[in-house]
Length: 367
Ligand code: ACO
Image 1: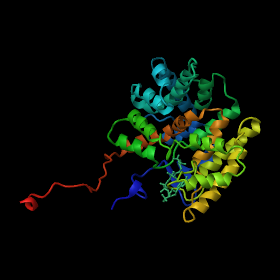
Image 2: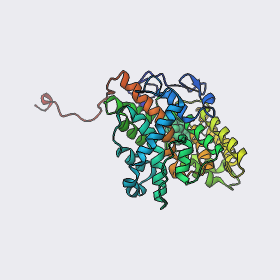
Image 3: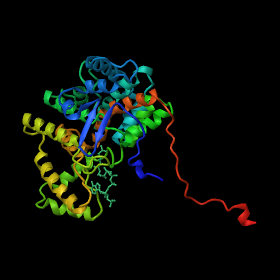
């Protein structure tokens, strides 16, 4: 019997996270995501994920922060040679090019991969805009340094906190498509960097990590529309999916949606201009949930993480072209932890397929 999309198939044991789709609960290293997001910086989340799995795992968030800072500086060394070709590629492909240019650093590869993503995203986006790159400041945290390298100006404390909360929220989430990809590649003993490059490629499709840009397109389309519901009904009737809704595992609301919504509200409270799309997003969300319930009465299709990701990253003035790469900047902590977990008890991941194609005529039958 085949399981389409491997639905319901357990492919690994993990100590990293538990996604309870019925209860709408995400535990990372035994702690609810609501407790982690907004209270620990990304460096602490990465430390938690790597703890006991990574070679020479950092013992404190400060140690992780220093190692990531050093690695951002190392990755920046490759920027000059890549800026021109990378500026002509879509953002995710440009980051893959950057990662492919890195020389493996052995026991430091998880730092290098994690640090390199924001460095390449910022530098290649600036190259696309015809701006010079901004060198990393290793004394800063990843979130603050990324915003600074991208825009050329220091981020406010509120912006740094909001991006930190986002990176923590998306850092780890069970056996999703990109994490599974990373584990398959790791099972061949390819190492951390190839596994991360493959995972990044798996993130490109709209069914996994590529949804937040289209969510923002939808919000733009709906701005000023007097009848949200009719527009959404027409999309569904035309066979199109509403981006930011639905999930393979969650049968209730994705808990990360509320975490991110709260971050947008917090950011908006600190600055009147930030979070301008929040009210529209709330109205669209309510109309979309009603439209989906009417369209698929037997199936609960609820809000997923990507919906408020779009609103939050937009409030941080990050271009929608970059959204998938920002997701990767958080999820890379989970990918690398899974690579180490796979390597610790490795068995080559090699499932089977059921052949249903033609066969050569049997000799006996043709005689
Ligand atoms: N809009 C409209 N219909 C939907 C949606 C949606 N967002 N989500 C599911 N459905 C419908 C499907 O059309 C399908 O109907 P069918 O049985 O007639 O074909 C039914 O619900 C079941 O859908 P599946 O694709 O089997 O559900 P699955 O669990 O595989 O899908 C997925 C999950 C891919 C996320 C889906 O809900 C979707 O396409 N959502 C929109 C894209 C999106 O938001 N992606 C980000 C996901 S979060 C992340 O990866 C970080």
